[in-house]
Every structure is written in structure tokens, then in C-alpha cells.
Length: 342
Ligand code: KG4
Ligand code: ZN
Image 1 (cartoon, rainbow, N blue to C red):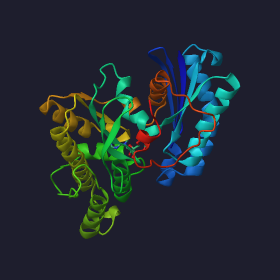
Image 2: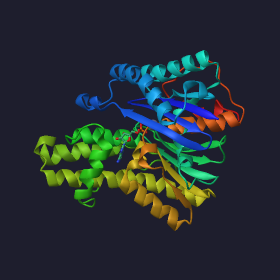
Image 3: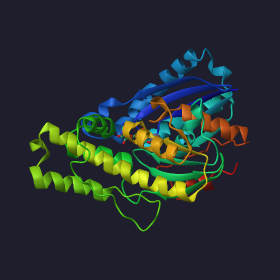
Image 4: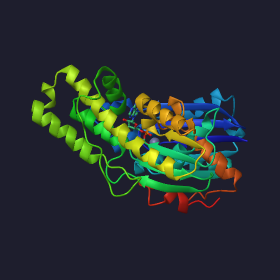
């Protein structure tokens, strides 16, 4: 069984092939030009996906030593994401499925991230706790099986990655903010500034907008504007901010580990690339005697391998989608629970 997966929800075009149980290609083309605009420009993103998707499919097939006619199943991300960007990958995939007369499966992007730990040799064991941290989402989930996902908590405002990106911009770094804050934080003192962790009346929800405002106020009070911040202090701000974000994530994960009987904990999504977060959650898992699974970097950010893998599971459980599947921009409450019934 050969599966072709396409991901185009934001600023990465990605095409992957899973052949049997083996991932034979996971090509990712990142739209780096968005850094010139301080964030993703949706229209430019759609156009870039349009230019690259076809050659990327060709390259992924070549790398897998397969012909288009060897593909048995076509899958694409259907949401959440930028509507124009989603439309490109989804329409391309549906067109391929129609012309090749092959089955088609649309994949929820977050479900892709949730199960991305299964792309690793050492896989999560059910039930597991999943912390999904990306540019658009921060979710704490109890994952009972491939078809039962219970949302324990979510962000009430900004996503963790969004907070990294906004604070990065605030202190004069570029987009995407995560990698730059991580690099600066390594040189700084994380105990220099005590940024707040939001206290919410929900045990598993998150809030990062207060933290973002605290960083802004700190800059205004001490330096008036970001241009006046000496480099070493920039590093301290980055380190102290990163510590606060990771502290908030850690706190809720620990609460969940104390209340739910899980075998593993899996850290997924773009922010899962953060080394400090990986270390802290690994230590938490060890403390609680749980298996810790975090994907390799190529599977943390947006990638089509996770989309093809999720499609494989859905297909094996009898799912098929019609070619009228439409893209959706945001994750509705419990969306990944209600729209699948495998
Ligand atoms: O999952 P992803 O690639 O796209 C979405 O689905 O949103 O996540 C992108 C996010 C961005 O906000 C980016 O700043 C963040 O992941 N990110 C990081 C790191 N690398 C990427 N955040 C913290 N530390 C990193 N090393
Ligand atoms: Zn993502």
C-alpha cells in the first residue's frame, strides 16, 4: 500500500510517501520569505504552495522510486489552517484522486500532529497524554486510542508558538520567533526577570496573552523601546520568557499526570522543537515513570509524513472521504472527536 500525503495548511508545503510501513519521502519546502513581512502573508502563502506542490510530488515519488500510478491512497490536510493555503493542497490532492481513480482521505492537521510520535521508532503507548504546541494551537489531550481523543485543556487566548512569535517581534527578532528566542535564551539568565504564569480557574487551560503584555511592559518601563535593549539583556528577556512559557506548559502536564493514568506522554507540534521544553518534559516523564516520545525535528513542524500516517490509520479503519471535502480554517470544539467515527 502506497500513500501520498500533502500538507499545505500554513507556510510549509510538504509531500510525503508511506510505502507499507516505511516512510520513503517527507519533503518540506518552507516559505522563508514571510520573515520579510514579520509573519505569514496568507495570499503569498497560497501562491507559493501553488508553485511548489507539483514539483514536490514529482520529487517525493522519485525519491520513493514510485510512479504516480503506484499510489493507492491520496491524503491531504483539510484544516485547520489558512483557507487559501489549504485549498491548494486539498484541491491538488482531490484532482489527483479523481484522475487516478484512487481513494481520498482528508486529514485534520491537529490529528496529524497528535499522532506524529508514531513516526518514531519508539512510539507512544495508549493511553497517552499529548501536549500539542504549535503556532495556532496549545492543547492538552488524553489520547485513549487512534479514535478517542479527549481535550483536557486549550489556550484561552494566544497559542504558545504565537507567544514566541509575538515576543520575538517585540524584542526586535524576526519571524518565526521560536528558534531565535531559543538561541538567545541559551546565552541568557532565565532567573533574571520573573514573568508571570497565568492562574486560571480551569486546571488544564493555558493563557499566554498576559505574559506577552508583561514582556511589553517590562521593555517599556526599563528601556522605553526595544532598540535600547543591550544584547545581554535581550538574552535575559528571551530566557526568562521561555522559562515562563515552559513553566505554564509543565504545570498543566504535571496536573494531568497526577489525575490521569497514562502510559506515555508525547510532545508534538512546532514548539516541540524547543530544546528546553523537550528537556523539561522528558524530566517530568521520568519523574512519573512514563515513556516520553517527542518526534525528530522534521516531524515537529508542519510535515506531510504525519498527514500520510494519519490517513493510513483512518484508511485501515475503513474511512474514505468524498471529493467534496472542504477546507476549514479553525478547530471547532472537539472537532477531531466529532468528525471521525472509526
Ligand atoms: O506546527 P507548526 O510548524 O505550525 C503550526 O501548525 O502552527 O508550528 C510553528 C510554530 C511557530 O510559532 C514557531 O515559532 C514555533 O512553532 N517554533 C518554536 C521553535 N521552533 C518553531 N517555538 C519555540 N522553540 C523552537 N525551537
Ligand atoms: Zn502545525
